[in-house]
Image 1: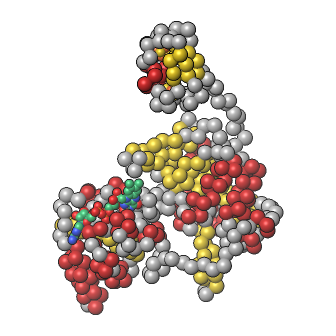
Image 2: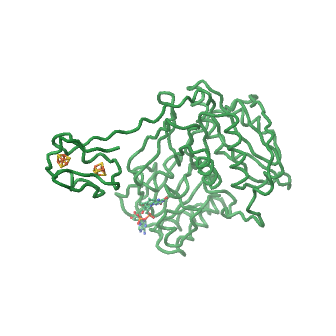
Image 3: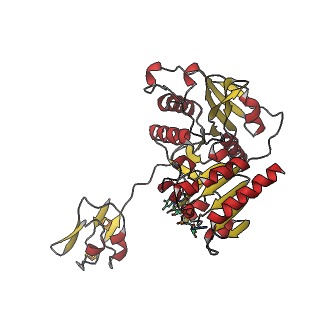
Amino acid sequence: MINVSKKCIGCEKCVPICPFAAIQMIDKKAVINEACTLCGACVQVCPVDAIEITREETAIKDFSSYRGVWVFTELEDFHEKNKPSKKLRRVAFELLSEGRKLADELNEELCAVVLTDKNHAFEKELGAYGADKMYLVENPELADYDTDVFSTILISLINRHKPSIALYPATIMGRDLAPRVAASLYVGLTADCTGLSIKDGLLLQSRPAFGGNIMADILSPNSRPQMATVRPNVMKLIEPVPGKQAVVVKEEIKIDKNLRRVKVLERKITHDKAGARIEDAKIIVSGGRGMKTRDKYKYLEELCRILGASLGASRAAVDMGFNEKSHQVGQSGTTVSPKLYLACGISGAVQHIVGMRSSDVIVSINKDPNAPIFNVSKYGIVGDVHEIIPKLTQALKNRLKA
Ligand code: FAD
Ligand code: SF4
Ligand code: SF4
């Protein structure tokens, strides 16, 4: 609530300062109308402290019944002895590795949540990466991801067990699921966190803001669970502990078939020809605007074939139509962490660097010796990429023949 007291001397200093034009002078007194957003700017300029804002204190809620760090695990299809099967995506282990630290600091359990048509003894792998418990919902309806079905189940589980923290992968699935759950439970959600820690018992969620130029630290003190998504390849894996198994807690949840509004007719995998998703690739050859044309960018395909690499792209290269968005590396693309990242004709804008700087070895080719990409590169080649790539490709071919 905002109020102008009798102290007002009619100096009008507050009028131009209001960003919402909410103050009018009536009978030489400031009068504030309903356009006011309680931003407080006028309070600071009033020379006689005539403007008072009273804010309702947020009720302090008791969250002591909320315990446990949860990781939503995503599964992917693969073929085992020519039979379709499912396995845990690597990002599940990355989240568990990070979740383990948080759970230890809070002295709470680390729990993995698995929604699947069939359990494939996931408790062994999950346990090895630190999970104490695995909440398992098994049902043939869960063979394919569906927003309505998965979010309804997850909301039921959260309401039943009340975790203090819930982490999701910032994958296509996680980015679809987590906001739905957050909106339904009326809790906050921080997307694409690059750092997680505990501060005064709360989850401190750090993420780049303003185009990657500053880091924002976010707390959710007034709601539970505290929820965050984390991109693949951002958190480091811990050493797995062989032999440790998560305790399996089977959850019975009735799934109403009418919940599903989407029917999956066909699945097409858009991984590159080498078969690897770019976020899982061990070697990436990436091209930028310096590749000049789509045809010249395609030279990189041969190099990829020889190296067994996946083909990446800067946003400029994607915008120029050299490759699909699913191959874009960076802040608004994919975060990658290969053993080798070869950047060809990429300047090294901060939005690109944040997506590839955790690669083990970065090699860059750029004709500009001052290109920022060299600041994060282990090896830098200053020169024309159109001369160097054919020579490099040929040299590798010769080596393979020898
Ligand atoms: P440029 O910056 O134009 O660099 C081209 C480089 O090629 C130059 O360094 C030049 O010296 C070199 N070159 C030219 N010719 C040759 C040659 N013959 N031989 C050798 N070198 C040559 N970008 C991303 O990549 N990924 C993202 O996810 C992303 N997200 C973004 C999100 C936001 C909110 C914003 C604002 C921007 C984002 N960007 C992203 C864009 C980013 O800021 C840069 O514009 C982009 O990365 C530039 O791509 P580039 O390096 O290919 O092109
Ligand atoms: Fe305007 Fe902000 Fe003052 Fe409200 S609090 S009257 S919006 S300056
Ligand atoms: Fe009144 Fe203070 Fe506004 Fe001046 S700045 S008109 S004293 S409310």
